Image 1: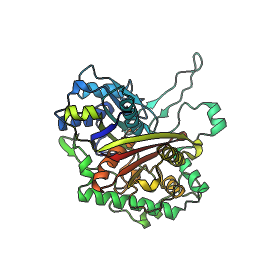
Image 2: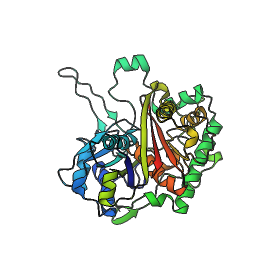
Image 3: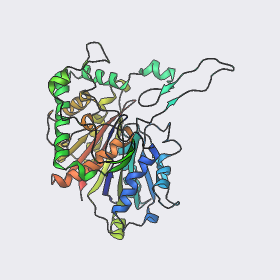
Image 4: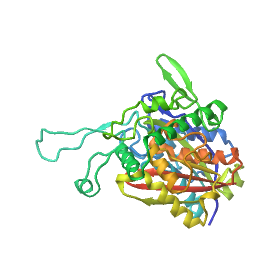
Length: 400
């Protein structure tokens, strides 16, 4: 098996819903970090890129018709460079990195770009076609997040809990209190703000130039983290998803926009193009769980990964766990034997603070982890995420 190395990566800032990146088309957003990677690595011959893998969860609007291929063309890559869009919902970006690494390991390719994109702001409304001739009825679905065009058999067998409702289910079944969820959310914001102030997050972010009114402005930092939040403010938020519930807007991930891209290369490609490897991808694993408790997916994906690699959780000095909800993040950490405030888990904050552009988030985890290995002088990193409709994904890497 050939070794697959993450050599470089960059991401856009993560924008709030309707925020600074709202005016950027999704396909243009996907192209931005690819263009930046090529500019940062002039020794890399674009003709040598074997494939481009991008995660995207929506694909109902400007991200339709294979947004990875659109990004290839918009980024100015040669027409011969192909592109494939991967949809494993929230795990799409991490699955894109894993797919690139597997293709290199198998010897099918030598050089790839892997990443992900999501503009939740620009997700369109969609309408189904009429089921009967001359029908006067119609439906409209918001594609930003969640179920649409529901299959009645799925609904009968598994239910169609919304994402926040699955967070409530996990909180109830794993006895995760509201207070613990709010404390976790506060830590996420505090760590993210500290990482912004120290310049750590700037190391993975490329500025994006956008039009704001009549002005052209450069967006160079994540919009979602809140420096002014507190336990009191978090505790005051309502629980709109269940009477007497615990899940709030404050202890859940955001609805956001962003994109990321990484260079994944074989040892031969590293030498040929003078690339600097950061991390070697060890392995990846996925697992299924009940859709109504989709948030516990990382438990089973991580356990499967550890079993396959014969590693233990203590072998990882960096863990990037996507914070879809504080309830599921805490349930996952506790089931895996990690303390709630483990300093090596999301040391720069997670999705509750940074935001969660669905198809991009997994690529961000891989990018952040590859950098954090160097920042913390750690040997191995684990990235893991829960996935809507009941899945989990995990990826292990080691410092190159």
